[in-house]
Image (cartoon, rainbow, N blue to C red; front, side, top):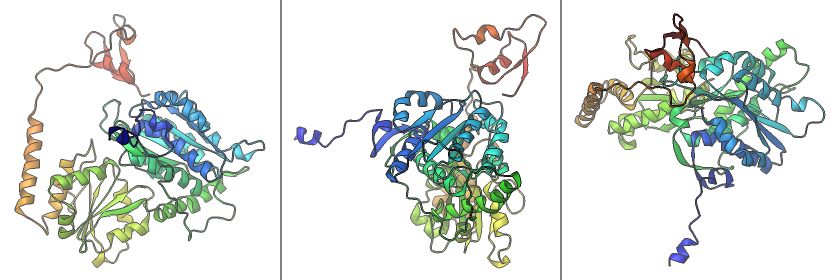
Length: 479
């Protein structure tokens, strides 16, 4: 009996995440970024394409372990014709990735295309805007494509400023994808490369600590994602991909007239934005994206609202996989029949501003109220600083539900959530232990300042000198 059972039990290895052709494997979000180009290569091989991958960037939390993970997986990456070359800094790395999209402009190319992956922490996105704008306007190759992974530290746990890279990408007209979990790092990553190939844009990819440091048993079947090419959108006769020569004004025209709108059509055809919870008589719609989507679902659970009760109350939840540009057709379908829409997003508004613009020309009688950072009277509703929590989201949802629904059970749950938050806020630690340099770290001596001198802190561990009394270090500099 035991022998028969053992024949059906697959041996498990931590290397499964890189060695298995399909099935499931345990991995973190960072390791998913390593497996992701392998999946793309598997998909290309299945299509009869001879492609290669190029990965470059510069580490920084929450992407601090990417280079180490890539180096450790070097053998597996090379098996899939993927070359990893960390950059001296983020903008030089982005320049190299831009070059990967130009290989097919000249004779002698060994591959049908090279798909690129660039990564960098929030400050790295900031310093790389020149190359990101140029590379996105120049375009991607037909069988290449680029994912630009931005590591955002929303809580400023290991940064000099909290980061939110969406608005930087928007400034460069780069579409943005926002995975909610590790599985979506893989799934949306594949969508991202195919989107990049279709519309000719680089594609921004949001990475936060909650996704990069968490781990799951992920489905790594390369055929898991099915790509739908939009049928109704008319691309220009000469296409949207990189070419040479290519005058700057032609690049601008191609980007603003075709490429961004092609990205929206791709999002609609592939349902990157979709309703995940619905009601036959919807009244309150909740639109959200990325990690905030999980906060919404946890908040509903904490409030005791399951799918059945949500349908009874009239709650509809819309999960946005591509926050910018916000695809309007699915947005209008979501908004149809709603009395009110609550926008739940972390940090500064990305979705809310686009949503109100898209609904502005709705007939007044059918136009839902839209609230998010502020309610309809201008009072604060959801914070645009720090991080959201399920408790914060639950209290915001409850404040909107009270207009048309109430129950003793819901009131009891909300009271419990409020009491729990008060208890957490009252917890005080008597002993304060400030972080210090590790034993043997060169910073122990290099940050000591000559008598009569003053120093400024730098990024990384060097910053800790600013709170050490034995070395006069005040203020700090950027990266």
